[in-house]
Picture 1 (cartoon, rainbow, N blue to C red):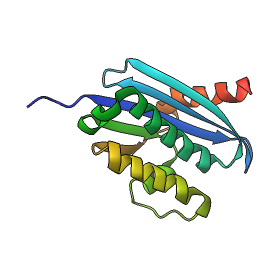
Picture 2 (picture 1 turned 135 degrees about the horizontal axis):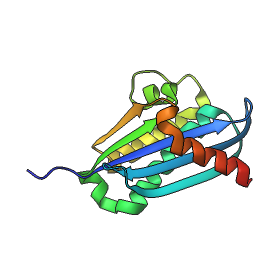
Picture 3 (picture 1 turned 45 degrees about the vertical axis):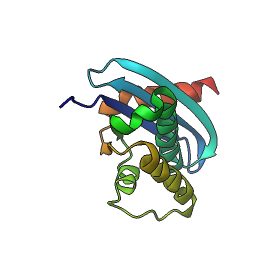
Picture 4 (picture 1 turned 45 degrees about the horizontal axis):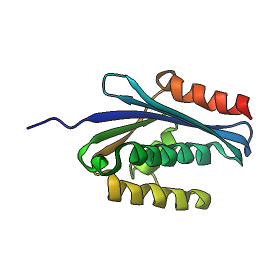
Length: 142
């Protein structure tokens, strides 16, 4: 049996304040670590959890643009350093902030429609340095 192609995506979101200027970064690689795509976006004023959710949502949208229907037969690992968001997306923790529910639903729907083989993995900030760098670049660009 042929092994599924694996894509590893690092996502990060940050805010300077609570709320404050916010940004998101997405760093997509193949299983060997070869960079496929980098994305960054300044989000205006938001909370850091919103920025983390936005980064995951943007990552999934980018993956659909890159791979279209192939996403259904590929293996995806989304790595993020926001443990609360990782636990919420993995259905381990409940969402307590009403403002995040609509993004959770959108991510859930994308997951059901396009990503049957996806996992959300918590990593340390040191392991997420490329996505964090993109967040910093988005702040600097603004």
